Length: 489
RNA sequence: CGGGGUGUAGCGCAGCCCGGUUAGCGCGCGUCGUUCGGGACGACGAGGUCGGAGGUUCGAAUCCUCUCACCCCGACCA
Image (cartoon, rainbow, N blue to C red; front, side, top):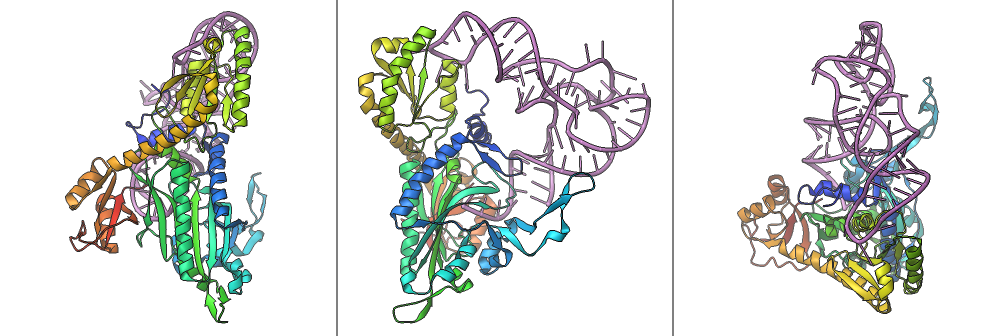
């Protein structure tokens, strides 16, 4: 029995909130919809960020930073883009406060801005206003820039990590000489995201294209990685957009090609956010709390000394000293919990926090020159000779990483159903939930009707679709695409 | 923006219907001691403008009016 945490079965959504707060990942901020990422949650983000940043740089991109504030007029330059974001923008209208009669503060009306400023919901517009200045010739291309930043989207309903008013992310913005090159870039970065999700976060993802309805406002088309969470709902975990010449035209960004002809450049943008932390929690967590993949876990091993008195404390600590040195030198991230809490309390606490491997060390272990290792993913308990630790710990961490991935993959397989009739479709979505794979006639109308009737949306048109010979699950017409439907976060 | 709910100690709540000593309980927190291989125990202790503003009353956490905030569920979104 886990104290203070709703079971997944009882209420998955309450479970999520309980775990996020009890594990010390995040807390609510004072302004509605805002969140504080606490040190333990931020450590996970740091590890994720480090891995992704390396991949972004290895694929030829450089980091830069663009301003938080954007002239309001910029947003309107790309027609579709405005539609997408206008409804959720924070706007700066004044720049000063003054003392009010009641002793508080009020907006100083004299400080009203000539042109109002918006807080970026995404940075395409500022970045393209700058790219106009920076790009003249084909020699300036490709321009491959990424930024790590915060963005603000004033959402109605928010949830820790999954949808907050302000969130952290990385947004890449690239400019290319040809449409082919832009498309190649879009797919390349999607592949980076797939690697991040699968190899680091141990979350299997479906890759493919978004339907027109679901694509990014302002993009020609959007690719995505889509994952199944523990409640069988889908979570869009990363997107990569081919923006075509939409922003180049909106911001008049042209270059001279080798034939001395002026052309609009081709653009891409791609991003993943702190939502991925939510994905890790939702994909791997169980009733005991988090289960973190070793590659991004803040601590890979937690050591719990078990002692009776000062003498045993002394002995255990001496016993542990070379073990710790060893782990440090092999770059294992570990933490010794020497707090006054009881061992049982610590076991539960660190299970809640999802540490992949627990090491218990007590007087008996000191006698036997062994330690007790317990896996968070399977609960397996092992008595391991100290001399084996140097090899055993990295091997176990690798195995836990792999096991988490396999479990999630297995779960997705079990809950993905290929259907050919709308009755089957409704029965799956309405009862057990999960991913439904079926034919779609490609029309916005059908997509909308299904959403209206079942709440399920097209999550992705997978790259491995085989629409030939299929008929639309809703209209019975020949299918244009084979798609994945699911209820989504 | 619609529907629902909650504001009383750091957290979770009781008290409110039916106004009346010094506002209570659990957890947590502090000191000391005993404990320590699956959420230990005892003793003592600290901690409150009862979300805010008005009003009714001899007297308001409790009744009335207004207001603010947050959470959950729907429509929109990474």
